[in-house]
Amino acid sequence: MSPVVPLQDPHAPVDQLGRTMHDLRISVMDRCNFRCPYCMPKDTFGEGYRFLGAAERLSFPEITRLAALFVALGVRKLRLTGGEPLLRAGLPELVGDLAALPNVTDVALTTNGVLLARHAEELKAQGLARVTVSLDALDPAVFHAMSGGFGTPGEILDGIEAAIAAGLAAWAGAWLGAPLLPGRLTDVAALAGAITLGTLAYGMVVWIFRRALPLGKFAQ
Image 1 (cartoon, rainbow, N blue to C red):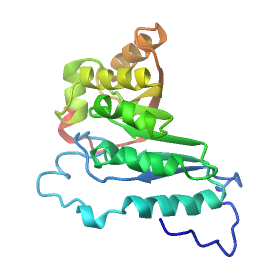
Image 2: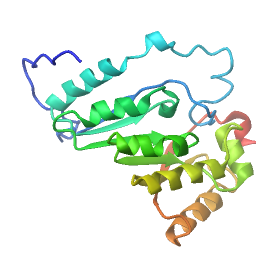
Image 3: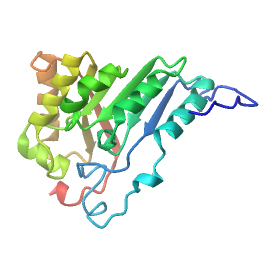
Image 4: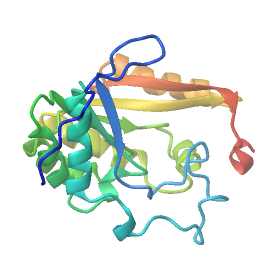
């Protein structure tokens, strides 16, 4: 990687409340292997949709250089996202490059978890600290509707367990949207209950969208 040119006015970025921004999210892949109706619905992202080609995405050296510039401005925590970031070939290599940047204290990953089991150990070895996994339902039928027909709850749970076994801090995240769909509160409550009761040995966050989303056939 070429050296980072010092910024002429290296002031730390702040949010609208004047708080210093220490966290940076980096999307490494626009593609996903799910078609969740609240994120990448099939009607929009079908077979004919044009995603970025490999040559159009930022390379790992470019991402690392960009991250280094933000670190020079005060960023300390980096989170890799997508699309589905584990679809990006060689992702553990990028994790290692980012974790090696001076002053970076945390590298995390947001994923749907389907590919996590096969990569968890290498990601941990390269310096990944935390992983947040989307797990919208335990019921296979509900999960199938939420994912657009891809993956299974078992695959996600296996990925989370592999992450924990590798030494990663793991969280499950569930989407709870508006308008509320029949059974969603019950299903998310069951998932939260399983975690609270220790059936699932990790924490949970719930993402709540207050505005109505175009759920299409999913709402039926």
